[in-house]
Image (tube, rainbow, N blue to C red; front, side, top):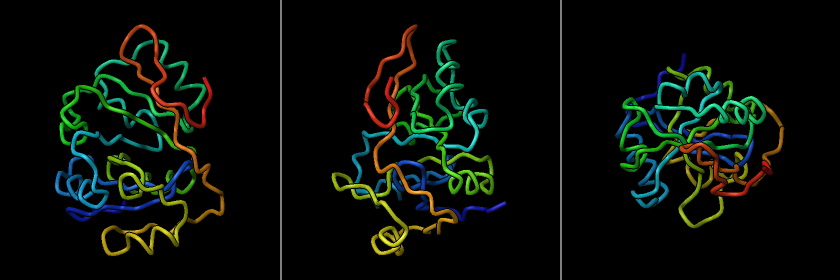
Length: 184
């Protein structure tokens, strides 16, 4: 088990683009992600895991239709937004009452999540806000090695270099908020 140090931010490969991540209970590290990215504090982070079951405790309610999306597209480049549970920090969600969750289809991320206590990271793309996301290890190392722990990939699988599709699942019918890799 990899014990994240207090305040530690990771930079890692996913199936889409590189990401920044921190333990969801570490408010210092979450603040550091916002600082590194120069991210507006009104923009929430999402939670990622290697298994959807690890994310369920952060979600208050999952509509029945969402299970069909989960079964069909996860792991994959799909971010689902649900009403958050009381276990989900306001710091992660920017005081919103919802949380985005994702299970990347990435062997590198899955192995990393397996080693993290709780198997969940609060995440966002690895970049400075308004700049393109980092696409490879060398770029992550060059730009962020003094600010984050860069996790070297173990696979040669290429990133999709496109964002995930984002779906809002708070009502009786889902709504596509961002078109990405997965077409619905």
